[in-house]
Image (cartoon, rainbow, N blue to C red; front, side):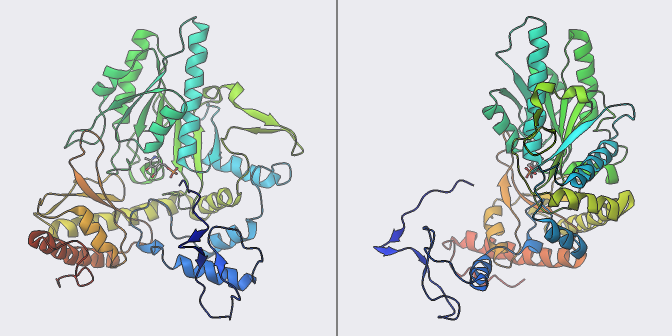
Amino acid sequence: MLSKKKPSTEDGAESTLATTYSTRYFGERVPKYTMPRKGMEAEAAYRLITDELNLEGNPPLNLASFVTTWMEPEAERLIAQNNHRNFIDREEYPQTGVIHDRVVNMLARLFNAPEESESIGTSTIGSSEAIMLGLLAHKWSWRLRREAQGKPTDKPNLVMGTNTHIVWDKFARYFDVEPRLIPMTPDRYTISPEEVAALVDENTIAVGAVVGTTFTGEADPIKDINDMLEELCQKNGWDIPIHVDGASGGFCAPFLQPDFEWDFRLSRVRSINVSGHKFGLVYPGVGWLIFREKSDLPEDLVFSVNYLGGEEHTYTLNFSKAATMVLAQYYNFIRLGFDGYKRIMEGCMENALYLSRLMEKHHRGNMLVMSDKLFMPVLAVRSIDPSFSVYDLSANLRETGWIVPAYTLPPNAEDVHVLRVVVKENFSRDMADMLVADMRKSYKYVRNIEQKNIPRGKNRSQPTPC
Ligand SMILES: Cc1ncc(COP(=O)(O)O)c(C=O)c1O
């Protein structure tokens, strides 16, 4: 989020937070955009901010976000007790580093890195940082290979679908790489090996594939892409890696789709990112980047510093960060184990399928669940009734507390308008029943308004009864 400097006065008067509670907590008005000259009591500051946050959405009803909204009290205690640890101070907090190493090892094995491989990895703030770092390493390796062959290095490209997250476009722009985008179609939202084959060449730094897309929760056919790419590389003497974006699906596929090959079982998959703070079940922000082999990360991208005491090697964009979410990730790994994660993922999936059946039953004719077989607990439904807008439905649902986003699919499927529900651990069947009941009310209300052409906003607080 970019924030702009605002005037310190409004209508000639200083912009202030109009404080409540009379003089119980606040003797003076609190300026909004200028640091107050005098401070206030801790309790007063706490109350002011807490009250302001009441305007936010209710996290358990936030079905828009993939990000974790609930952790166990013991995990919260661990987080609260360790907030003062800076992760980068490895010399000072060596055990945190040891725990980090264990998590990287566990993930490499979860993603089926061959036992003989020397996998390496790092925690990041989230998948975005992990994707940037993964692709940067591939760009670097590509350049080193080209330089060694005496070939030009001025036209790197990256092949990916328009179904990738915005961070892939950011990488291309920030790091000066040509994005070669595979468009979607109105009825297909993943990429195919043939489309990838048509775009790759000797200047391709990597192919991007997604396990659990942001838009529909589907997975690209990574094994087919891998096999096609292997053949092309052998034929042309290329060495094109696949980076798999497993931001959400990386923590679902191992438990829900064990036979689906998407990870280091595939020869061209050289790096994988995953968000610990999504189905890794940790609060934001933690992500992970795992390279299949040490050699997939060029040495000159790894920086060593010694000003914290010992020798520290880092491959991150930022320096300091909280150690807590790394510790919380480890907590979940040892607390839940493989079986615990599997149980939770299966529970989410069962509830997502239940919701899908309810939607099909109650919204037949106006909305369509977009895939008959869910890959992970994410449900995207498209509108098939032109007499109402999913955007109005989403806005109306918000009035009952539910946060269900509406958006268009990426090019060339922009005419498809969808609603998406991410089913997380705290979403029960009971909540699914309530959501669908509220959706039916909202649907009737919105359609009524749109058919009568009543200006938006009017009577919105009185939805038509079901
Ligand atoms: C497929 C995919 N990749 C990357 C990201 C970015 O992840 P993060 O929010 O962890 O930076 C997301 C976020 O939802 C995503 O869905």
